[in-house]
Amino acid sequence: MDSIQQESGSDSPFSQTSWRGRGRAIAVGFGLVVAALLIGAVLSSGPLLVGEASFAVLTATIVLSEASYALTGWLYLQRWFSETVSLEMPTLREAGWVIVSTLLMLGIATLIGAIATTFDVQLGRLDQDLIAGTPTMALVMVALSFVLIAPAEEYLFRGVIQRRLMRSMRSDVAIVTAAFLFVIPHAIGYLGGVQGVVLLSAVPFLLAIIMGVLYERFDNLSVPILTHGCYNATLFVTTYITLV
Image (cartoon, rainbow, N blue to C red; front, side, top):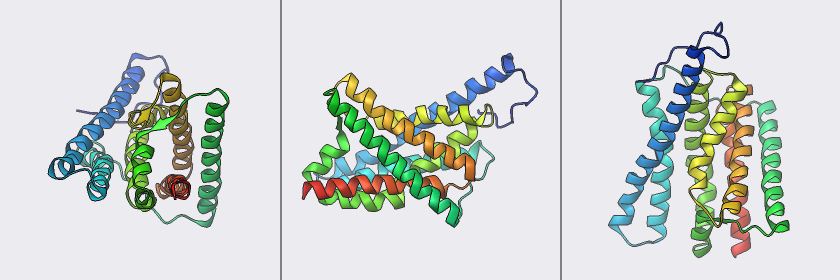
């Protein structure tokens, strides 16, 4: 069972107790990611077993898979982690940071794409391949980005995992650690060689750093949620325009 007691600030950075606490926090974070993936696999397998691969089945599969992140985070909070996740309407100042951060994230994605083109690195994503066969799915993903994907992923990775990590380590270290964990479920859906997967993994890692900083700075989960949602929605709108 996970301990929810704050690590003592008087601990030496090299003390056995503090390192044990950090290791436990990282193990908990990794365990939550694995649990979310397993729950998502079980839930999303239902539609695939019931019907043929269709627009409705694909949508249901994505919805159930993403819902597993929120479900995992909620179960952990209810059972082991006595924290509340702050979620409020963003202020005008926070909304400004959402816009700036979204543009920065889009710039990072564009830069990674340019690097891949320059060095002839093949990039591929499973979700893009699925959408390519059903362009309308891109519009569904735009809506899901705001109502499910961003809220569910930010709830688990920022609201639960990052906050749990901050119980045992400095905020900057917790943000970076949570960013590494955020890469895991995304990298699973990447296609291509090792170089392509590594290069693509830099995108969610850097984006998670930005969203982690936003959450730590404002202590309002709606800020990284809106940033994440705007970023995803922009990519899916671009994909739809390209396909049609």
